[in-house]
Length: 338
Image 1 (cartoon, rainbow, N blue to C red):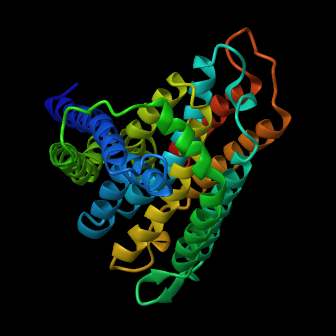
Image 2 (cartoon, rainbow, N blue to C red):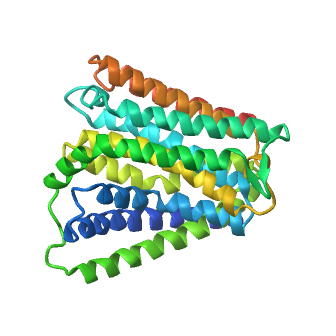
């Protein structure tokens, strides 16, 4: 292994570590701010947590689309993160000792899962249209971009009435861990952690570009597999923490909500990509990730209704095995199609 390969992998590891450590702190301080300002049991608190866990995707996506002009990295991060987030459901199932995790969740999550499928499907339609030369709307924007923003806002408005009670239950279980610190002190630490995450998110697309060139991989593969796993670390941490506290509904809601926000990030990336519609500039192979994410979400929705109790080899339910399998197929196809 030559020096250039070692150097680029060390840089990627550094990005992963920075986002992982700072992302955890960002989530902790964000929760403390919600508690200190009285937002802990409100819809505003949920918005704060969702923004915090998705900050790496937003920073990396805007940098990749607006500055580095790496549309495949931006799209791969957004769509790949959706697949990774659904893989977290399978990981949660391994940690749920009592019974399969989706059998313990409320059926109301079907609504957020459905909105996720709607948003990802809209992006997929936009990608197909853009590849055929029919993706433009006005200036450099794709015609699905305003639709995705509208669908996201409508989904948030509707979900507000269904999820607010669950957020209140979670925040009651988790007291303020920084009670000795003032709101100003916690806010300063929040800002510092956010700065680290943003800096790592800005650096990450350039590292992904070097990784692509050094390893001889396609940008779509690097963005889907490596950039996405880095930016999905905060979602993994928050979801596992919620499971440890017994807040299973928050854990699952965080996954579906993050996927919805990822599609908003993809629309924002299009707003910042000046050369033309973003979806017209990316590889058609990203459609594989979109279809995989919708299929994985569909499996989760079916499980939420059927509430399966059986475990395979006393390890995980059939749902988690299917999710692991689909993730593997998605990774192989993204690599094989380039």
